[in-house]
Amino acid sequence: MVDGNLRECISYNKDFINGSIITRKKYKENQGIKGKVFLELFDDKTKKKVKEAYTENLIPDLYFRDTFLEHFIQGIMGAGSTRECSNYTWFNYIYLTDNDKPENINDQRVMGNIIGYADRNELYSGNDSIRGTINRNESKFEVTDNKIKINFVFDFPTHAANGRIESIYWAMSNPEYKDYFYRGPAIYGRENGDNSYSVSSDLNPRRYYAISRLFSNAQTIKFTSPTKGWLLVDGKNTDITQSSFLQFPESLKGYWLMIPFDINTNDIAIWGETIRLLNSDGNALEKDSSHPVKKYDGLSNISPYIGEDGELAFIGYYNYTVSNNNMMRIYKWSKVGVQLSFVDINMSQEFKDRDYNIPFVYRDISSLAMFIDGCIDIVGTTARKDEQFNEYVYTSRWIRVDSEGNKVQDMIIKPKIGNSTWFESKGMDSGNIERRCYIDSISRSANRIYLYYTDVQGGSSFYQVINKQGNLLEPYRKNFSIRESSYARYNILGTDRWISRYYGSSNNILIQHLLTSRPIGAHTKLAQPVEKTEANTMKIQYMFEIDLINYGEDYY
Image (cartoon, rainbow, N blue to C red; front, side, top):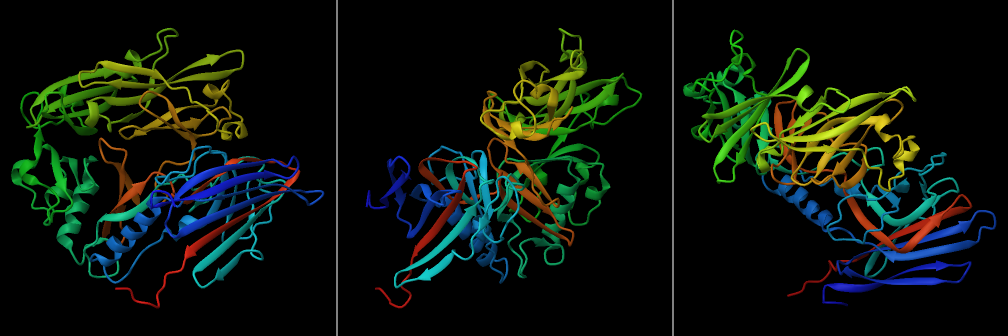
């Protein structure tokens, strides 16, 4: 035992051909749950063992906290008699990857290139190059006087899981779905007396319609905490102003509004602190088709912003087109809604490639950073024809502008392949990547930028994650979304956290925490990588050893 809460365990790799043994010491939390992993490689022709590796796993703290929250919040605390805890699925699949990072109590997702995987629940005998199978004949369950032992055995044939294996994970989804968001415990929707985890229009119409009318009709929704934020609302929208459940103030009708909200309150909207967004004349902001300037007074997106002077302001924008040029109007309002400035940017021309005189094509705009530094993120492309190959070369760019329209960043964001093996499987490499894809959209949190590249000229689409400096964090993600279409996702501004809102078809609403990937149940790093080739078959035994609770005696 080390430091009272840690215990020492030994990991080793043994080579039966040259007789070498490599050992590593690791220290694990003494949880009463041990995961023992035994990997064996066999020569397919002689059937003799050529290598073996043994180690113990780490079950992340996330699993235990999620279990408690799922059960306690969505069961005990007023949501009815049903007790929900669905994270048993975190142990549905075993993954083999080349990730070389040490185990960490805060591990959350499968990392590294996927060398192999297998489903714990389904046998498999196909020719997939990475998929193995559960061996049900050798998988066992054993109970002793003081332990329960569950030993899962997985087999990988010669054609599967070939490559460098260093990490073994348990996870909840197969590779097709592992990058989808995971929905955690509820934040909003726990007070009903029936067996559902939502706010019902029948049981609590006041709260249901308050959030349903406001959120469904808001132009933008900005969370500044898990429960609070701002809604951009058109005060001319009768679906909101004429709802008997909202008590919409007469003084706010006809204006564009920034409405602060708190989902912990019955009314949701904090009407007394609502901001009316005025035009440059001090009147309601609205389009005037006969006016050369005001005919473009629209709104697409607004965010609160705390300036360097500590004062609250609001920054927003509107996109429109003039003579085939993509335009952006940027506004800034004071904390009481007085318009401080507006500026128009011709993105097509001001951001064009001046060396080749090629207009800039904007693909997407993100307002999520306006809360942090008052800047707007714009991604787009310029494209020039390479006559030699008869293909277009796309230059993808990430541009940032402030509330005055000043360009504070113009970064070329050529996709970075890193050590990912996926790109090669799709026929893309560092030489042709700018011909096979271009930037199509951006989403972001405080420190992580999620870029979506769409396929072109024989390429494949994918997500890539970088930091604010443009450094690669994740070379490849298949998805960045919630798999269920009835859920919307929101970043909590100024953080790397996300939450979701459920659009219920049966008149109910639920808001939940989000994790940006399907989570892991356990992570095991080998003492040294094991290289499997087509000459080898492989067997992996994964044993969970749980100290049996003594239910039969009382201790005082």
